[in-house]
Image 1: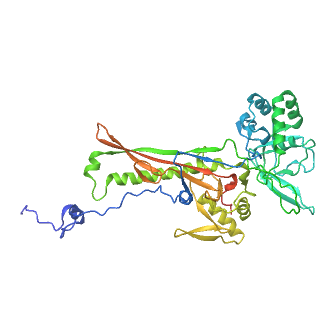
Image 2: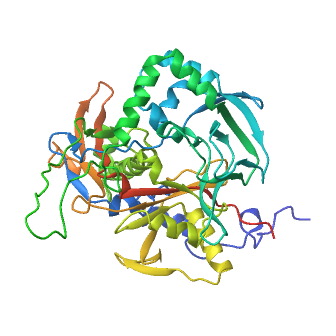
Image 3: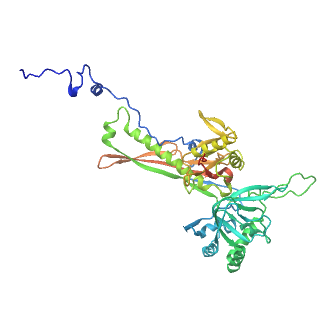
Length: 473
């Protein structure tokens, strides 16, 4: 018997004999077609595209305004050590108009310590319209409806009071204070309550507090226009030869100044990469491209969320409203729109836009669309609603919607930057060579300079407590 093995028709590992060049081997002789580096974190950045940008040659932008005598209502802050341990942050009592700019912290601490915690239930009436003001309320948590009796005896909903808002402090303006509205809780919550007799007792013990309140009352009695600005005296509709009033326009003595902020990073590239691996794409150029995109994304986040100049934190409290029922309804958007003239745009989280569309669908309404730069943008009452994922979502289900008027000529919101920077590659952004270190790594400093300014308070308004959670079927 012959031991010689017969030739197998199968190739290696039992595969059939290969009759042509494999694609795997052929790729060694081919040039791969490559895309440029892609980045998922790039968004539409509609806020930055729509902001009118002002060149700030000196690095600082001053907003001059007419003298305003009306003191805005801020929001009081709280610290909570437990379910029943809620305390007022004394310094934040200055957000109450009558205590604005009051310097004596010891008096504020004593005033804060006199407030008592009171829980309230949904549907509970805290105060009745027409009754004397005997207590001051600061809402720590919850939602209160302000109700009034209409001309024909019907009940009207005038507004909503939420976390940090206060009721009853207006009693300092009159000798016989009465509640002008009924306050009824729409949700369960917690209020900090101070008896008015306690306030009067502190007036007697702290003369500096009484003097401060007296000055506030005097200023509040000066003539103002509907926006709280010092009046300009004019005469109209007269005949004969009456004495024409004299007037002048008073300005704020300490106008706000905005310094340009910045976002920076140092881009590092090894010289061997920059020298040898530049075909078909320039490595340095591609690295800079993606770095600039990341900086611009952070820039828009800062324009919205920065505590010093961001729109979300610098909107006046009297330009903030709360939703009537939770989700953003057409009624809420109409109220937000009615708070200013010539609203240019809404800015909302995409989930808030979806929640608004759900409410429109429930009412059988279909929002408009507007074309902007080749894009179809949803709109309400002819005002486009731009998406912005930088608006935060609180507690997983609440966010805010902003409405803005834009431009210097329109006394609106403007973006600030400086043009003509050294080594500028985009407006307000430069890339500066920093040298090569002993490890042959090349460094570039990439910087964007920017800020934003609100020229008058009603240029921007915010709809707060927008519930984006879908209703359970």
